[in-house]
Image (cartoon, rainbow, N blue to C red):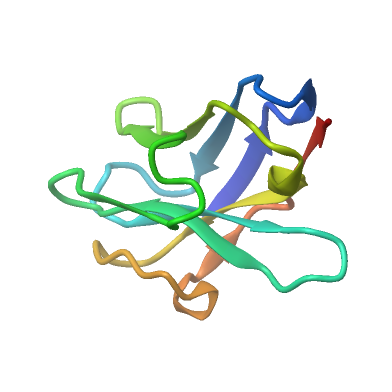
Length: 124
């Protein structure tokens, strides 16, 4: 069983930056895909970014491309999301997710494991 724990959320002014981290336990190595999703109040959970298990390829939602960067440290079993130029519309609970294989997908339903989330609030 894989456990995922997010950290790094908080309150930041528009234009600021935050770095989220996700610590994975219960499985070692970097052969599985991982991703970040977010959910704002009253809205469905939406895809933010993902990284494949082999090769390090990444995919991003159009709304964050160029501002957010996803990365992973396989030795430390951690996933990160560097968020720059944050805007109020980025306010949401951010979730870390992982799959059982190397392929990254946009759909939340394709991910097998989830963290509990970390709140990101961007003030205008």
